[in-house]
Image 1 (cartoon, rainbow, N blue to C red):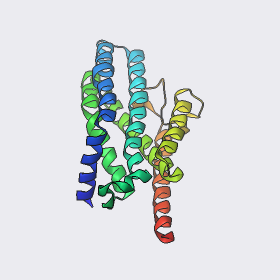
Image 2: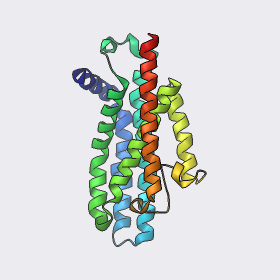
Image 3: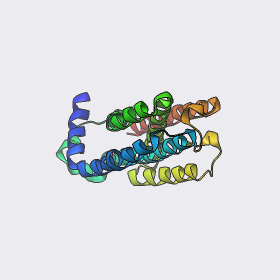
Image 4: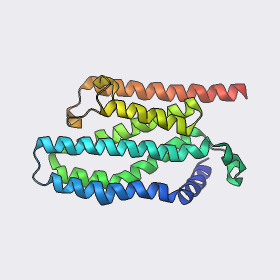
Amino acid sequence: MLNNIYEFQKIHLHTQRIMYFLPLVFIYFFLLPNHYQLLVNADESILIKIFDSAQEFLILIEIWFQYLGFRWILSPELKEISYCNMRIKKNMWFSSNTILSVVLFLPYAIILALISEKYFFNVPVIFFQCVLAGIMTFFLMHLLKSALGGMTVMIGYYFLCVNHALPQKFSIIVLGILPENYRINWYITQIIFIVFFLIGVFLMEKNKYVQS
């Protein structure tokens, strides 16, 4: 199974490299230099804006990366490719995509953490949010049986979050507050969401195998 995932991931990255490359260019050649300039001697109000910006963009890019992965797995056209004969479990593929995202985001996160010094612990929270956004996107794509449909719904939810249209505990992104200062009930709610979404995917997979 791991060999299948590895081989499929190589094909996936090779055929969609430009789709991954463009967001990374944005992160490392626009977002990071901009944040670096702002972080020099920044006060807390500027730091809040920087971390708000990091959350917004990284979560949106994580949703895009999950879409790139699952439009292959959920696409009927994939069955016409010889490599489709490899048995790929969706949960393993999601884990592979998430690890890939972490690796791609890690240099940005390390640099941001080193520059912001005492605000180092804000960075792991942003990673937590990205993983949660990925899990929600995975669940929605699985539920709708459509990568595009799942991504569209998730982006709609994302914009509700950034426009303060949802209560704080139901929002992945809490703007105007440093991530390390989020209330404990936010973490509890998000962990409950993660468990709920993973159980939902497990039950859908189990039901699929029972029906087949």
